[in-house]
Length: 615
Image (tube, rainbow, N blue to C red; front, side, top):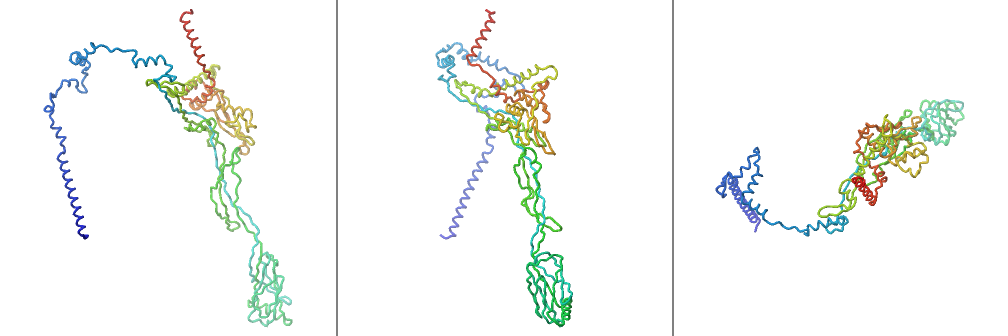
């Protein structure tokens, strides 16, 4: 089959397929058009009375509904009438009144199981009851904790390099060509004088001597003496002549002489006059060539760096890093009218000093707990615009688990932690007791005072040396029990440190207590110290954070108490008493079961005796 026939068959097949597809489409389109809106027409033409048996357009029940504005039709009354008069209602009433009651046996399983559980209730909680199933419960509790801490403080300063330099002697080899001479005739010879332009040592010397075309009768050899040596130039001896003048010393500005002697015993004056005239007219030339080692002054530049910046003099400051902040290269400087290039690897350094190390303070426990995350942080106080101390809130997650029993769909706790997990937060009792304790402590303080300037939770101001020349940090937040490295701290400072460990202090601020020539030689930090954790909590969270009443300045702390009006304005419910919980738990003595039973018996006996009139 040739290609033409094959192509014809392919085209014919494609045409047939296309025709068949078009026919199918047209058939489907026609069917869709024929049934369009058929359902709507069917519903419109529907006649229910012709189709539904016993159909009525106005049933009796339509009286029960009169629209949204109609009043009540009192269906309850009509229902009771139907129950009393209709056949269905009479059948129901007769069944209720005449049918015998089903007997209920106390031995039935659903009854006996309940009575057995009631008789042996203890078995439900100890796990021995067959109808109960042990189950673990858990609850995730989120708590917030307030604490204080010092933050890491770094400060930076810059040091800029300047260009400086000086002159240094250097040996320089130079080539000189001397052409300017002063020619004179003296007895029996000629003298040519020149002034030395440099001070140095001759390394090599030569001269070029070229006779004139007309010598004026000068046809003899000439001996030339200079620089401590002599050489004889033959007649008509034009050319260059080397001199053995090595190490001959020259002094700048000093006159040196060259002597010419004509080797002729007769008519010397004639010859000398002819040579002199030719030298002065330029017909005969004499050039002196010198290679001289001389010493010159060369200016050499270099970068000059200032000393450490002022931050280094601050007491307690430690250099952390020094980085190049302006890159190196060449800079040009002009000295005595001459431009010189000065190179440096770096033209400016930025130094970073640590002026305060981070100290977690009362936040150490929460910072070390992986279940606690930092929620908020707020600067408590600053110095020179730099924050030193923060008030911090941590959010901690704790999972409480316990075991219990599921009996008949009800869950019964078998231990205390289970009750905490099911019923609510574990510290609800502690919080309530703490609030009561705070209020009671405030009342006790007020009761012990007179009516003048009554206040509660009074503290006292105290300070410590944070940084001093030759001293350690006597304001550290921990480690006071071991006293390691604290030999130079006073007894008051050690007592303050222990009070900080017991969470009895409020950090007031920091100041320079000793300064010489503008340099701080000693820093102090001030605190308000209170007698109890309750006092510290109420003072800091109540007085400072709720009422906004500060504790004075670092130089003069104000640790006064809280007066009655201020106490009444405090909201104890939002205070965080968790720092007091440990003291509360350590100081609580919970009686054992026998003691509790004995106490209850005594109270019951007392009540019965009182009710019986003492009989």
